[in-house]
Length: 382
Ligand code: FES
Ligand SMILES: [Fe+2]
Image (cartoon, rainbow, N blue to C red):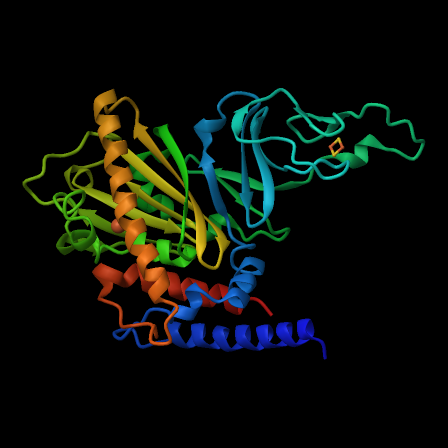
């Protein structure tokens, strides 16, 4: 047996062993939940398994719908190794493959507006629907431009977000997110307009950021200056979960004035909290009366992610200075989380990172929900 075959046999055995470990961890007694052992944040073979399964089959937030307001507005990204162009094409926002059908050159970069995408290699030109419009000097009788359309992926809009799934057999997003609208519909999330977007690479596993963003247990410890004043750990309360999401409420102390009016359907209680939710696998969001912050997590390697975060504002509820302050605040908050996650990433490589006990529902119940989702979804694959 050569080394490669041996290596992959070991890899398969390791993945099988870890899948069992995942199911076992997720089946811990309800009042004694545990986190995942460190290997789940490091192991190459398991990461490759996740890429083929739960991540490939997942719906991934790629931006806000108002980033694609005009015909031809586009944004490029790499999602699990797939180069994509998200573009407004008439009434639709579509996810095209960013791979020229001639010899494979990427067609577009960054973000912008285009009436067509012209390849920089031999100048083939494609429309915003992915059809090949022009292929200079291609005179072969056997050449059929209709067979050279750009590939497409599933792309839908919910709550003002644009979601993409790479799998042919995408799960029904409305089943995944059923009941999320009962939770966040009152904020009228479609009415928030984007004011800021930034992309960074963090050196941590993708699950670590989902878990971090979704638990209120660390708020007062990690964010004493930035968040503790209005979302202290002690006021965190577990929110509802659904097939493909979970949530918690970061309530504000009584002495904090409401931070903007927001949608007419919000009563005093809802104006006095931020609602944090995750749409699995890779989006985490904080929504409040006037502000919506969303992080799209794109796994790159077992130990690195690209994070694209956006901030949106309800109507014209915040003036320019306040918006700038909020952007600066969230930059600090993200930095504080990043620093902790990158430190933890190294320690998770230890044989003693065995996955410790989790705190109760209000503080880390969302981590348990994520683990249950992961284990359930993982079990659907061969
Ligand atoms: S690779 Fe795009 S035109 Fe040749
Ligand atoms: Fe945090």
